[in-house]
Length: 313
Image 1 (spheres, one colour):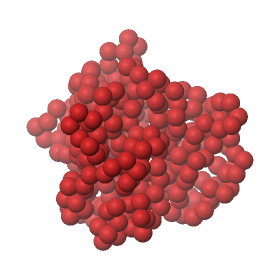
Image 2 (cartoon, one colour):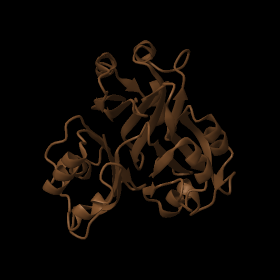
Image 3 (cartoon, one colour):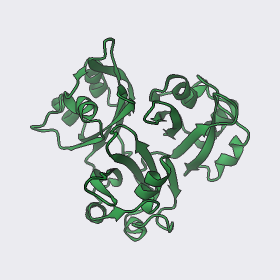
């Protein structure tokens, strides 16, 4: 089975801040697409990363033919059918854009969703767009769903302003679409706040299924009691349930492993081969057979690091 997310890319501002350049990615063997991406740049409003930058919000693009997408031929050759761009801002400053690509496999279930609350027109948070693979009925239910603060995964993220990991969404009273989720095998969820638009609230959710997981491990890290460190707030691993206990007392310092680099740089990071991890993290990842990862900073409107989220493959 193919993973639900086939490619993850990071795009970073180049000198002068007038365009985004390639900052690395995970390609799962799609080397030809990687080669094209490595030589591509985006101006503000140009292509999928540039559109997320210009509009200061997550952007979903389902279908590349005839669109503003710049790498259509290469994406189609790689079997990619959908892209979702997540901008990372520190106040008015663009820090990065993370792009996720999915494919069009026949057995392809999961969800990447974008939710919005606009105080001028809405009383609840509602779904703007999303990608669901072949889970068409779940998509229909989701598009009709609205959540108040503290209800459902989007509402929990909205209320807390922090990442939220839900385990066993099909049995969680906090996941209001659990009946529909159970029918298609969704088993876990990650929701993250997106502080890019001062006038609105944005939330992005990742829903993972057993057969086509978004990732095998999700983690949320927050500032620790020791100044300048991060500690694990919550985690979920389908290969080592309850592994979080192994991290008791662990505080990650700046530059230490994938999460530590996010702490030091306040930039998203990808690692095809994880290295430099704290001993407890390295041992746990090794036992779970996890070799690559993605980590993203959650920056508040002033640019301070509220949390870091990471997932591993």
